[in-house]
Length: 158
Ligand code: ZN
Figure 1 (cartoon, rainbow, N blue to C red):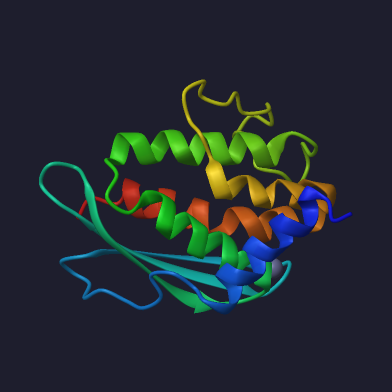
Figure 2: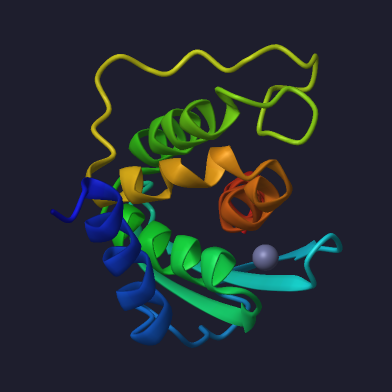
């Protein structure tokens, strides 16, 4: 009988084969942030069009790398498009909390090395497919790369 892990693997592969929001936006006016994971060679470029109401009107993803890094970026783009910057920061926190559970050394803990407390009211949906990655600590940075790059893009003043 197939377990839930088989289903999750299928979602990850689907996003890898058919990446959502692939491309670029003209920058400026769009914000642009670039991330690199030297452990695996993954590159992610995040383009953000944030309107004057603080809503992410459009997001595009560039770059290349392993299936985990690219599918995480694709799922991220689908999860944040049309949401406010505040909502997105909560989603980022919830995702990084999920990825920090089993690793203090390579995981997505905060700058003091403390595990990140997940916000109570955020549902990750399909993104939970990536939870299995925490069993493979060297791959955690593959999964979090897009999210750290997104944070850089949000912090940048357009
Ligand atoms: Zn990777």
